[in-house]
Image (spheres, rainbow, N blue to C red):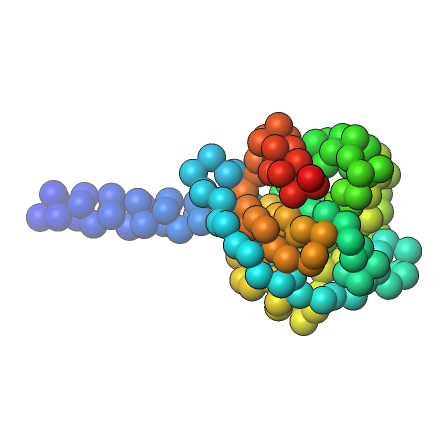
Length: 182
């Protein structure tokens, strides 16, 4: 009898412990997870990129049509996402190094609650590329963005050439960008 009671108490304790360790959605965090790219393969994709128009951090519209003829990196990210924050210095360096060659990096923030927090974050990190606020209606064409960072590489003809879920080393992404910049 005592062993059954002990087993019951242990089972309930384990169940409560497991439930307490599950990820929770916060007011600032959408229902997407942040992930590292270590175990996630890149998905080779060649299809037309969707058209979109989103508001930048100053409330001005930014449209995909503004980047025709450029190689565009679209990075879905959020200020609360640790792997996203790890990638930002690399994106800053890539934009600085290859912007003159036709590279444009666009950060699409999935933060909720408006741009105020994102503005402060962008200033603190010295982001040198356009940052816009994500809008699920405008972004359906990219498919399900269920984890961040999720990054798309779009060629000069407007085709998605690469889709990456999870953080990636700058050197690896630079190789992919260079293959499309040529």
